[in-house]
Amino acid sequence: MEYNRDVKNRLSRIEGQIRGVIKMMEEDKHCKEVVTQLSAVRSAVDRSIGLIVAKNLEGCIREAHESGQNADEAIQEAVNMLVKSR
Image (cartoon, rainbow, N blue to C red; front, side, top):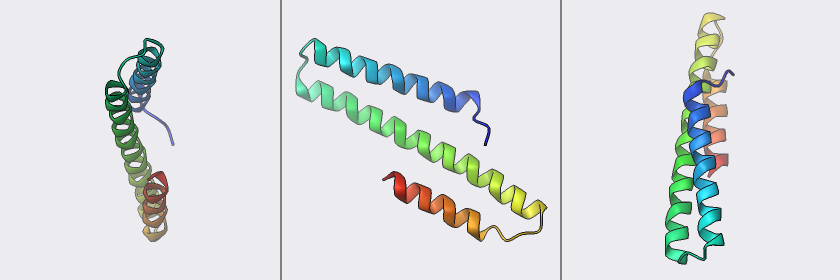
């Protein structure tokens, strides 16, 4: 699978958020602020996983359709990836 610029940009923003959380910890920020930021990071990671799985599924279904194969296996694999990510 080829990862487009949008996915890479999302992960770069997440990296920046993580660096920000580390800085907050080094500055002894209140735990509520740190947890709030970590929750935002988790949400961003979850959205990124969803995007990656969706793009992968889209490509797999397209390939299966073009080759005359059943797409059920690709769909099941995508579902398994989403379940595993939680």
